[in-house]
Image (cartoon, rainbow, N blue to C red; front, top):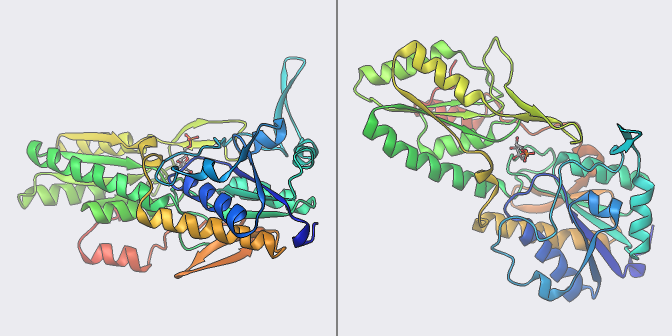
Length: 366
Ligand code: F6P
C-alpha cells in the first residue's frame, strides 16, 4: 500500500442501487480531494463495471459543481457487475469468472493510488474483497433501505421517507373521499425502516414489516373495527419484505448476475386482495416502487453525504484503509469493512419506534 504522501490520485465509484445523495457524496469527495489535499480524482463509471472494463471519467472541481441537488449519480451505477463473479458467455453458455485482477490492473493503468467505493452491502463486500487483495480502499455507505450494519443511518433513506410520506398523504385524501382501504407497498428489502417511518409520518393505521410477521385476520379486524367506529377509510403500509406468520415473502423476480439476486415485490396486492375478500370493503393497492429512489436529496441526506464523502478522503490521506465511514449518533466515525458484511440493520420488534407506534394505536397485524 502507498504511504499517504505517495497518494496523488484517488478513484471513486458508485455501486448498487442508486439513491438520492450520491451526487452530493461525489461532490464532497472531489472537492475535498482537490481543495484540501491537491489530489486528482478519477471516476469509474457504472460501479465495478467501470473498473472491469476501464470505463473512466476524470473528475475536476467543475464536474462537482451544480450536482449537489440532483438525484442519481453522474458516474452511473450497477447492481449486477461483481468482479469476483462476473458473467461471461463461453460457447453459448453463461459462466461466472473472477476478473478482479483485471479490475486491479485498470486501477494501476489509471494511476489510481486509492479507491473510494460508495455502495450498499453488496458493493462494500466487494470493496472488502479488493482490500484483502491489497487495494487501498475506503467505503462509504448508501441505501434508501437504511439496512446497513455499522452505521446508524445511510443517506438516501431520509429522501425516500419524504417521498413515501408525501405519497401516503396523497393517498389519505382519496381514501377518505371513497371510504376505501388503501394498501401502500414500499421498498426496503428485508428491513422495515421505510414502511415504519413513512407509515408513522403518513398516519398509517396498519404497518406491516419483515421483522414482525403478520396475521391477515388481525389486519382485517383493525380495518373492520375502524369501519364500525365510523372511520370508513384505512391506510395499510406494507414493506416489500413483509410476510405472514405462516407464509413466505413475495419474490417478484430473480436477477441472476446480481450480488443479491432476489427482487421483492407483490406483497401489497396479496394483502389488498385478502383484505377486500375477507372484509368486503373496497380496497386499492399502490406500489410506490423506484420513485422512492429518485428526486432531490433532503437537507439531511445532503449534509450526511457531504460529511461522509469528506471524511472518506481524510481516511485515505491518513492511510486508514479497509474502513467504512459511518454515522454514530451525531458523529462521523469509521468501522472496519469486514465488520459490515453479513449482518443487516433491522427494525427491533420491541424497540422504541415500534413501541411508540403501538402507543398511538398503530397495528402491526399481530
Ligand atoms: O436496495 C435498494 C432497493 O431499492 C430495494 O429497496 C429494492 O428491493 C431493490 O433495491 C430494487 O432493486 P432493482 O433496482 O434492481 O429493482
